[in-house]
Length: 351
Ligand code: SF4
Image (cartoon, rainbow, N blue to C red; front, side):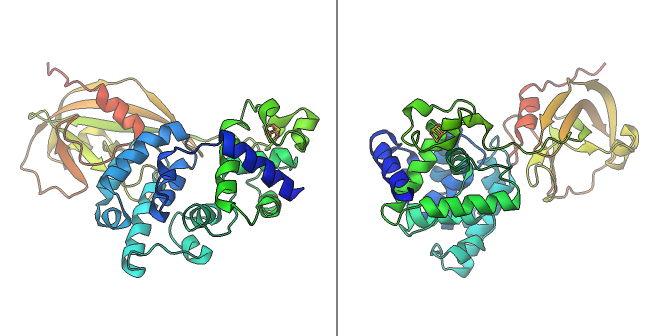
């Protein structure tokens, strides 16, 4: 059975698989790595333009290691899950310093790099180094859960362990790189989350979920838990020179390292906050609320636009905040919701 699954999948791949994705051309470990990280939680069509821009600016591990974090995050703006970009940058610096720019090849060395887990390490080994390795990314999990009717939420350790055993069982010794690409392609194109096309699938005769007539019942969803909700007031301050104050978010926490607007803490008064910065509000305007869903909580952003004047000579600014002209003077990457706010900014007319 395992062999026959691989054979059917490879036959299907030869005719219907994707062979012209940008990272399939010249699949060096670096190019495969960047694509695998971008493709986590993100669709191929969204990734392609980001991937191409990233490769234009950082064509190899050396250019990525030498870039600033701001430059890297600016290329990630809008893709979300920004820890992925920060980890890429850190890992590139480790490969530059500890591996003399030679991409590591062993599972252990790859998994020791920031942001690289077992499946991503496996994908780099098979697709770039042409070694035997097993992968289990989101698409593959879905195919295997359905094919073998694996019950339980794959985020649970016991279910994940069972799935890795299934994945190992089916992965063939020959053409392992094509098999890896084939099973990812099947998940992305036929065995999709909500509308699997079982009638066109090369695995339909052995797929248990298909026989049961309920493929979308697998994989089981994460047990529902109500997400906590938070609110944040952000200050869109504009000075007499029509510049806006932007601040880099702390490394830890949401949007770490990206540029946003200063946050007014819930227990702070606006006047007092501005006073400490040597500023005074001339006028204020509440802008429409913006909702944003993170994986673990919901955020309501309350943007408050404030025209400010300077009341005293400012201390030299630290590098984590800057007065900039918008939208052209962005100092680095910005999260998607902040980018939306910037698109709608207008100076307030002082009355
Ligand atoms: S038969 Fe349907 S559910 Fe089973 S692997 Fe193929 S597309 Fe997925």
